[in-house]
Image 1 (cartoon, rainbow, N blue to C red):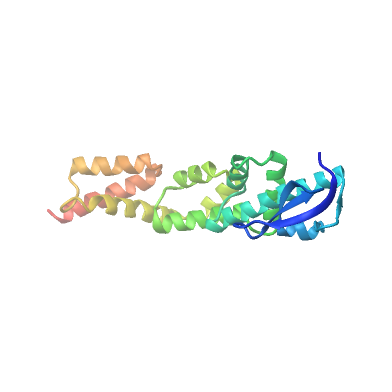
Image 2 (cartoon, rainbow, N blue to C red; image 1 turned 180 degrees about the vertical axis):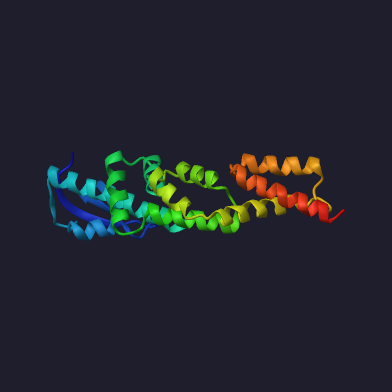
Length: 215
């Protein structure tokens, strides 16, 4: 524990928003300028052990919050992803929980919105079955009920279109309509992607109709 009077405040040469604090002529700790101002950490301020601990806790939380905002600024994240990120950065679980709640309260993380956006973008850019969408959301820590609600919005027609898009992408390498062996491989791919039996049967029917038309 440290205590004493602040005798100097030095601004960091590289990180301009951080300040080094000296107590009784010796370096004691470093804080962000927001904490510096909030706790009046200027020359002449007396610091006892209790105040010192309070400042360090506030600095830790502030550091975690700024890190969270930077992480969230890259792309949308789930609460679980943010918490894992903070823990990986070495913050205590209690601090990580507090920061996650703060970000949630401010709308910076919203698992329901994340799930809906994830499903919409996947269907538009990288077609997936409902099963795979559920799996992907679960891997990102989305609650099962929230994931289910987001996926329930996917109509059968939308899932069928996703299956067709995958087939078309793979079939570009094939000249003409797929032969029986190529058809089996394409349908097996849909099975691995988690598409339902009824969707696969529909696609099989369409592939065979195409083959019959080209005869």
